[in-house]
Length: 105
Length: 238
Image (cartoon, rainbow over all chains, first blue to last red; front, side, top):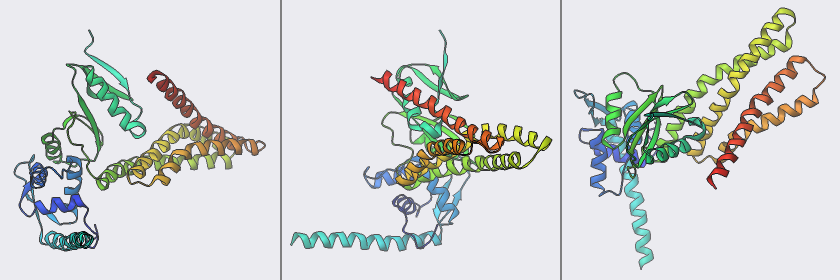
């Protein structure tokens, strides 16, 4: 995974909730709760992304004492990538807000 | 009364969605998926229920299974059966799907096509070598290559076709409609090409002729079966 590529939306959500250690199901329910059900991630999509983030070393295995509920946490590199992506996303939102504001005048 | 029964599969690469709908229909009648069976599924009699079915393709490393199944289970998808890299799940109708974005869906079919492609490629190459040997050699060696080539062709054609369809599924998921359509019509084009070559080169080497007619036959027969079954299904649906 290239560091300069924009994260997919699902990767962005998952990395965002992995600022705290969480296991697979907790990741999905946290995203769903925070977004009040507007955003959901299916288990296969989530599992695929967890494996990918591990491989890129953007997250690491935080605790595997429960083999069914392993927890993961962002690495420093992962935090950097997320912060960079967040900047781009903020610009995207600003662009849309400005556009709508102008149109409203 | 019998407690289990067998139903056929269209082959997951060829008819994943249709198979899943078929399993859902049977569950509504109280016949629930129990396991994979040779070219189909085994069903088990129970109470009618509105279940949906979904499949995932993935190679699980040692120690990954517990976590993998738990993530699915806590989302409402219970594991029913696995065969090699294919895992089948069931959930009450309305449960959110296994895959919720395009990127990971493309990866699902990508993992599957890479796996099938890796299995089919050596077979196709060996078949090519055997036919080349049959065309170029004489005597005992020729007879040997000829037999090997015929046997290999019988295995290589369906393998290559399945691999091609697996790639078609991946390209379809990625929105690469042109590549997917090409993969779909390629077997038909090969049959046509082989038939034309057969007529055009009817005076050449017996091995060339045999190769071309086998290629045409191996593709035309399943196409014919498929066409008959598809029209029969359509008639029954009416």
